[in-house]
Length: 434
Ligand code: URA
Image (tube, rainbow, N blue to C red; front, side):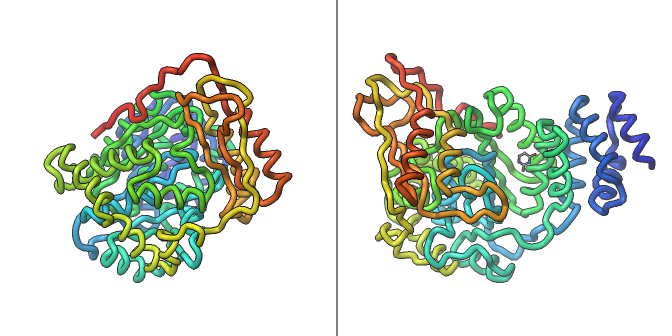
């Protein structure tokens, strides 16, 4: 098989066979196909797109390009969740304990966030003593005993995606649906869960900017996951403002703990109930949506989900007393309010820009070697649709210094749009696809 012929075939509108895609992915992963030929292929894919069969073949070839996790030694149903990423997204910290309390196991491997805010691991590592560096044995043991574990990725999972994503990033070929689907699903399939739920976000802070694009991406991810023999569902959710109120690592852990105590923001709670219901329905552990929601709500009301969080923190070396005494979490020395200078209603909050404010405060990673400050970030006091009066706080900045706080306050203030009329708020969860 010749790479030049495959490039020409795709360029001219042809459809690549499973064998050709296998040749492409294995050859590029091994280093036999050079970057310049793969770049040309990616650009041909950008203009021609990938059909469903090509996307499935890409996904399977990428999934098998490295190690795959075998969860068969763990008893019971194993589920995983993926979010296309958003600002203030601490869903895993709430959902995993709820699922464990309902009898579903979650063996999550996570990455560190590059960008606006930290990733799940960064958030968790703001808990004193907590570590995500688990040996594979300890990881499996904790999932079996506690019900869930979250570890930093070990082994060589999906090396094809690492190489191809890096190349897409510098060749203007990220935004191809088939490539996004195969990139995300190959990693999820390699992680071994029976059930995969996807949170596909749209809006100013989401990976997809419109509901239509989010829906098309979600549909294809579910279909590809099902074609690979897993049970999948996808929620399409609004990321036109940050999720919850807190943005910043320790601040988000506090908000997750509050949510597990039955308080916390309505959107975060609703998202966890909806994702959790999908998992319980797909696993056969609930007969219908109402029963699923009732089980999940019970895990909060009776404290069993919070107790699972404590067990999990302890099992990974952390100070579980943070769940009862949040002052044990890192706290920023400066807290500075962002004040509204007018009356009206919050019409819009630019989520992506809010993420950048947290990044500038030191809460995210601009390069992969940046060191995160776990204490900094911001807590919104108003969300879209809320009435506000001049002089009221819109948010509170948590910063390392006064200077950083004042700079962040100016940036955050510019993220709010306030109008005379209350805006029409779209439903937070637009749809669930199964
Ligand atoms: N996230 C991924 O993991 N891959 C993509 O292609 C896009 C977003």
